[in-house]
Image (cartoon, rainbow, N blue to C red):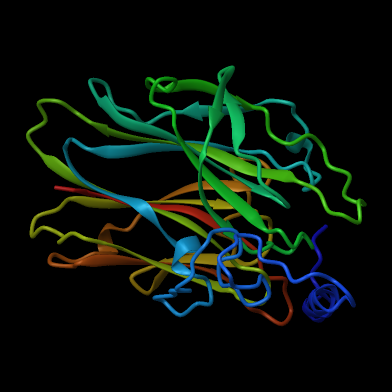
Length: 324
């Protein structure tokens, strides 16, 4: 069960920060103490925050972004939950399967990526089909209502040598069942997704594939996350636009997802559909995109309702495919 009392959490955080005699902490060594650093685990002396959300760009808008024009191009993706703390029956398996579908016949994989997240501390290495995979650190996001001040850690690895097409893949090597009563905290998994970017040689129609990586979260206080997929112009003639969002820590609480200002799913867009605490969600947003658009706005929010509990989420990937 999450810690939900917002006032209690705020008091706890101030209590920890104010312990008498504690040393000033600067986890990333950038000369800015953790209490005021807007990106605690990645050095960012300039504290740049171009969207003004209190999360430094080094932890928020992170490269690489992909803007690819590919013959017959598209994205296939699938995921699995890795969290033990949720208490669901499907969260206790020592291995976690991913059943990848959606790569069309004749397609060539441009790149296959494995994205994953841990909470409570870093966990940069997993195995995929028995092969060790160490990820590049994307960023650190705040705690998603589990009373784990270290927050969420997001990773990405190129697994093109392992993922060769549709089929069953197995993730292992994620954190073991934690002792949730440990006063020093614990490390647990969130989930993992395989994201495949492909093209179809010889296809006469070129599609635009756009992907941005994220490491930002709602924490029960900050309740809205926004992103803009950009760097392109929507063509005059297009047939379909499909969005992909990979999100961690979703449960049966209130949340929503919107594109270009229109909510397409609410009040529980991210219920942990891949298994405990993880969602790899596709949406058809064709009707919400217009020729000449220079961007696609995406907003994921914890729905605020005094009578209900808002969800706390960590956002890992936002992507779209514009088909001509």
